[in-house]
Image (cartoon, rainbow, N blue to C red):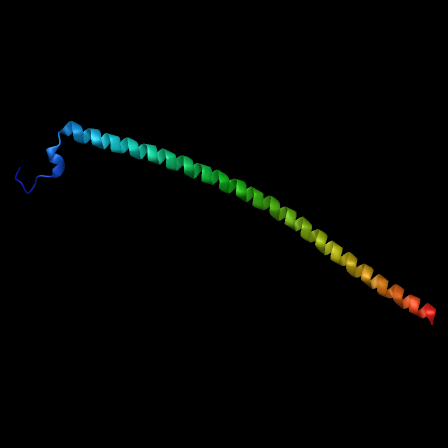
Length: 93
């Protein structure tokens, strides 16, 4: 082997290089496991938030139905009050 083909890692013994590679591999496995756990916890949180959003949506729909019903009732009562006022005016005359 001439000096042009020589690499810096060639100065280390084979066992040292393998030890370094194994340590790096183990570190990557640990990081991958941590990342997988974190991703799983995020997926779980997303499902919880979607469920909460669905419940809130149903609650909002119920509130909206109640609001619509209340507005209808208010319009009906207002019309009835106007009719009563007309009746009172006609009685006064």
